[in-house]
Image (cartoon, rainbow over all chains, first blue to last red; front, top):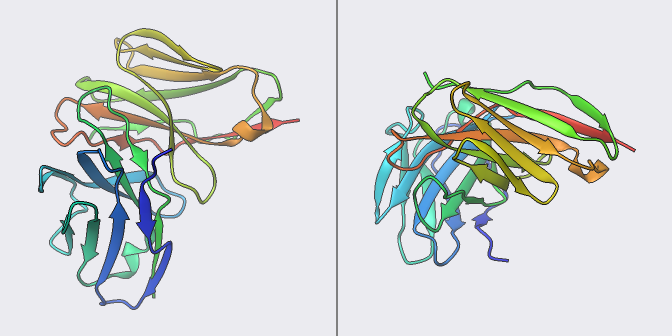
Length: 115
Length: 113
């Protein structure tokens, strides 16, 4: 079964450092997403990406965050200057289409620890 | 603020029983409703979705939607210990141009042998 692949599975970084989280969505999917889940809290939407541009973003997705699809397969989330409160599990997801019937497939996640 | 509310649980049911998980939402513009299962430390897995009022069945799972009451539920028949997980309700609204999902905090289900 096709999978969404995320690397690394765990990243530890110092506060103020830049991190890039990587994702390879399912190959024929067109919609891409980043979500995060702080330990013990709910899954929160960060950003959606379609046709090489951001289609929607949340209040969490401020100027410290950016996304990129540098080639036909990878989808990255960059955090420019990490803060302690950025520590969370970050999930990439992809979907074949938009619309009300489109559920998406999540990757296994990257656990980001900011120290 | 669009809210998705779930009882955090834990909901404990014996093996073979029916587990009933409930979710309410505040945004009347919500169009699609999803149930995900999340094991501890893992990513959410899609169980099923529903967007029309009524019931929708998929194997041991039945989703029920009542838009007038802003209520969606998930029934799990013949519950198994492997069903023990956190169940996340997620809602998509018409206003979400990027098809974002708004998640509830989840209900923890424990199926006891």
